[in-house]
Length: 173
Image 1: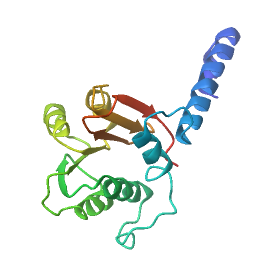
Image 2 (image 1 turned 90 degrees about the vertical axis):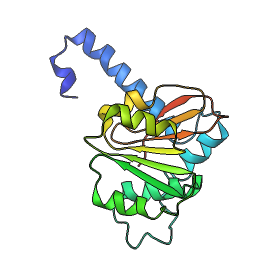
Image 3 (image 1 turned 120 degrees about the horizontal axis):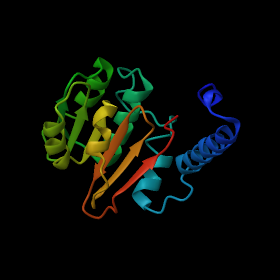
Image 4 (image 1 turned 180 degrees about the horizontal axis):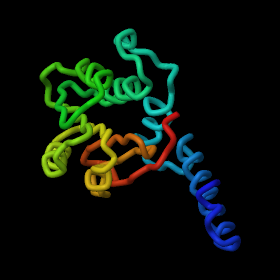
């Protein structure tokens, strides 16, 4: 790639191998290979990647990111919504589909959200959708009871007591 062109030839070969190894690992994980958690495998092969599944609200939800949020929130049974920061209107419309006033909360973190407030709210949510990647590392720290999924542009954190605390780097497309 162009970024590797500035490295000396020996380092360029090593960097290229690391880049290719990362790509292959992400590619395999994106299809469920090497994923040992049953919930993570189901989410990776289902709501996060499978675009064939349509929901009742897809007429009003346009972008693939918003549709992914709908599929994931529907699969996990989210029934209330909280939003922090500035959120894309299509994603906000998709999240509004789950405003039923229940206890299983979907938290949507957009740009400009306060990190401390997002961390506190995330610890109380079943599903956290992160669209401000500057907060991703802080929110997705490996803790017992969480599984996190990211493609580098957006991320989702699922919280349940029985989860092992793993972060999966996958391709959503």
